[in-house]
Image (cartoon, rainbow, N blue to C red):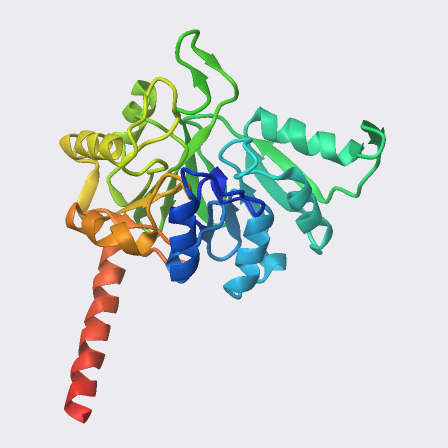
Length: 311
């Protein structure tokens, strides 16, 4: 598995710096590397991606992954930093075989719409079009598992896009539990504190890897007005998971969906988070179960010893 992107919505290409972020953005640009992020997406070998935008296409090319090999796209929700229907349509037209897209009812509606309508910017109207779709859409629902790319996926309802006062869901945003080769991953981006019913579902599992939303970093936010975590909220969620013993020993805990404007660059905060037992995500990061990570570290240690002896 590889994190193709780890940035929040403000990592858009046409970002205009303001007083809040100009110094932070300038430092990130100067540092480069892991301090620069694309929109969030996760590649699951051999042929599955969670969330898909124009950034995802660039990331696939950057990391040497053949886009034509992608046969399954799983969408968390309909915000543009996670779901861009036109980019999915373009991917499908370049594939020799149909592309399967999994998502909520809004995802299906959006893909149907772009297949039959195009925006005429010069006249400010939509016009009829008939595109070759090459897409099959499967609507998914919380707590109902499905298989994609040889892995088992279970959606759970995320705490995102919910009007707290009136309890109106703009759309059912989803987090996902991914099961493969006796390992279990929680992919929990774009969510604030876990909803009660969702936590009941999560109690069924013991996670080897967990990727959590940490959008706002050290910035203070109001949980009633945000469908995201900051670091303080994330620590509370982690404590909730630990009390319920949802993590296996040495589970890999990752903070992702990082804001460009409100969170300091990777190099400035990665070590402090590591002391708290949290791995800060970066674009291109390969995530492996803890036993594989330990094996890689052992091989690296053995290589370093051999090199030392050689020197």
